[in-house]
Image 1 (cartoon, one colour):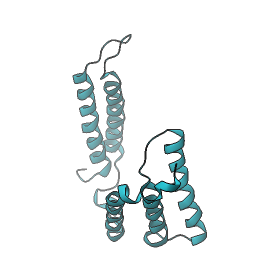
Image 2 (spheres, one colour):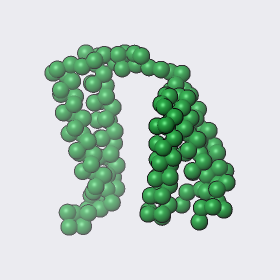
Image 3 (spheres, helix red, strand yellow):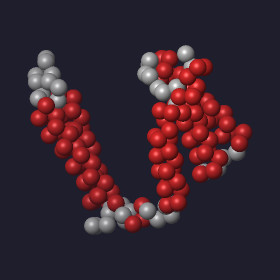
Length: 154
């Protein structure tokens, strides 16, 4: 029972949920007609707590996989490579810009880290990069660094 992965997961989310409830209450709940700044946080935390308790009860009554089984078969080399790639992404984000960094990251992931066919990797990488850029910059008007493509992105 102590190695039950679902119990540990439920306890983790219950702790976060209780913190959210406490933070919401600390900010002030207000009234239903005039909710305070913590009103939404408080009720989100209550819902999270209910879900965590439900999962906890199910884990205790039905059981689940062991905690060690969650890590079996993990490809640690690829995990560390993705973390390194994300650090490189963050380091060059301002200099090279969103499009170059995102395109480079996606192509590297799809061609070398977890390979897919080139005919699939190219349209997915370009479509995702330019689709996200268009929605964020043109629709939502969120500023992203243009980097080296600044002269062409106005």
